[in-house]
Structure formats: structure tokens, C-alpha cells
Length: 202
Image (cartoon, rainbow, N blue to C red; front, side, top):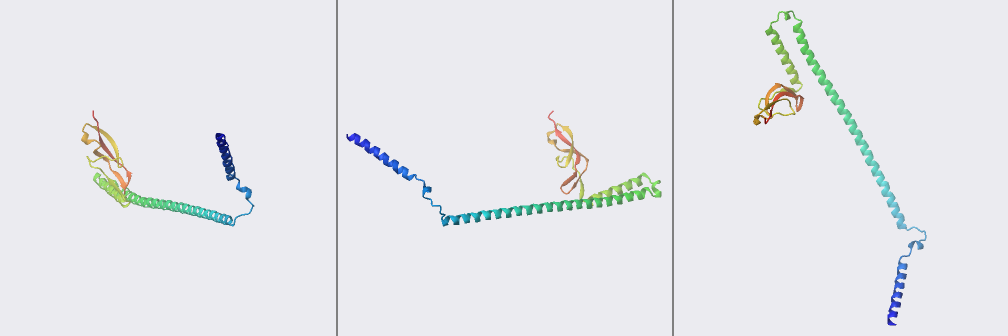
């Protein structure tokens, strides 16, 4: 019988624990009387203010971005206008110099002594024209350049004509310059034409 008593005691203990469990899981909303807590009202007000502040900041950021984009577009247009103006001024100056050279040539050709000019006279006038054109390029900041034989080939400033060689020490070295190149500052306007060695194992 003692064993049976223990069984009943355990069952009773389970019933008590079940009752406690059910009491703990009651629904608190059953006691809600529909009234708002003043502290909750203050919290809602704060949340509304934060949301309004966030919207204001977001709008300010958008306005700044639009303003910056507008400034960038304006600067870009001004730069393009400036670049176009510089190009036009450069072209005008170049044409004036070319007109001067043409006038000098016309003066010689249309002169009475043109028919009587010797080969040496024509050669001399040709040299004058060459000097005038060289001066014109210099005034525009354009310089001719030429590479010495034996110097290294560079694709950035040279236009190559390949010549095979069995000497590995000559690989990618300049054999000769065929035509000078032209640069303006760091910009290559016309690459120099050169003959460059290329090592061939055969």
C-alpha cells in the first residue's frame, strides 16, 4: 500500500504543477481596461519627432546631392566651352601663321625674278620655308624628336618596322630612325617611325 500512496502522491504533484503552469500562461490582455499609459503617449510623440527629423535629414541630403550634381554639370559645360575656345584660338593662330608663310611663297613665285631663279636660289627659299614652319611649331609648343640608333624601342613614342636579327643583344633596339616624331608636352602628336630589331632564334 505504501507503493500505491507514492503513486497517488506523484499524480497529485503533477496536477499541482499543471495548475501552476496554466496560471503562469494566462492572457494579460484580459485585464486590459482600454486606457493608455501616459508614458506610452510620450513614447509615441518621441517616435513621431524622430521620424519627422529623419525625413527632414533625408530631404536635406537629397537637396545637397541635387545641388552638387547641378554644380558638376555647370562646371563640365564651362570646361567644354573653355576647351572649345582654346581649340578655336589655337586654330586661328595656326591659320595666321600658315597665311604668313603662304604670302612669303606667293611673293617669290609672283616676282619677276622667279623665272630667272637658279636651283640654289630655290633651294635657299625652300630652307627658309622649312625654318618658318619649324618656328611655327615651336611657338605652339610642338617639338620634333628623333631616337638615336641603339636606344630601346618604346611603343608609346615609336611606330616600328621590324627587322630580324640573330644577335640577342640587339633585341628591341632601334636600328635607325626613318621619320622624326612630334610631341606637345607629354602628348605624342605623331610617333617616330623607326626600324627596330627583333631577336630570331633561327
